[in-house]
Length: 92
Image (cartoon, rainbow, N blue to C red):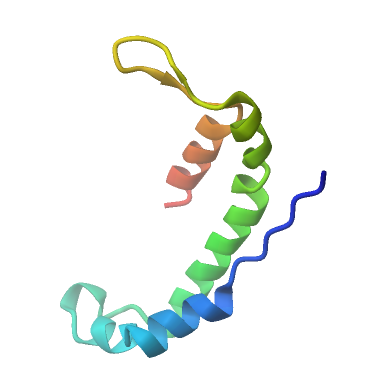
């Protein structure tokens, strides 16, 4: 089975910019004043690639293997999940 996912980038951008008026918020917030729309567009694009290239393939192992409770609060995740989390963390 071939899985396909296309992140709804247009909808994400519209929601951030037109519904939440995020650019105005960024401009008026000292900690975010350096953020511009181009930077956010690039971040969203990279998030979409990550979702498609890294997370989407995990659907199968997640469904087939599932998470398993081991003991004393420890959980084993399906194949690929630890690597995906590490890639996410490493990407910042």
